[in-house]
Length: 138
Image 1 (cartoon, helix red, strand yellow):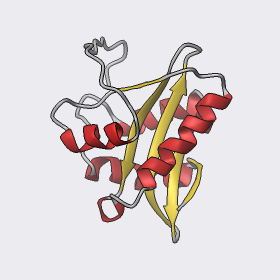
Image 2 (cartoon, rainbow, N blue to C red):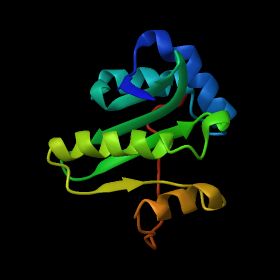
Image 3 (cartoon, rainbow, N blue to C red):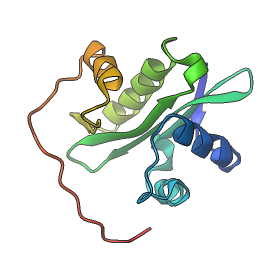
């Protein structure tokens, strides 16, 4: 798999992957999420390609205190081949190069398969709650 920054030509394939892997929600327009990311640290929006096919995505951010990971996904046909871990490792490398000391990420509690994926990669589960408030309605 080749890892590279997102390009606008990837838009449809990225949204299709997110939808196929259950990452989209009615209250988050994936096209708006994508456009917002391109306005802030676009170099932390990565895709993985294999034989010309987009098969993985990872969106990261760094606010000067903590890094974040969103939309880490691998196409179902390629799941379990280490592509998600490779994409995450590249995102971690880029965040570390920016001086990022720690990454936080959110996983839905019922998503045991994804929780086990992060467990295997050394991510620790913290007993905390995620709170949110919309500032802009999609």
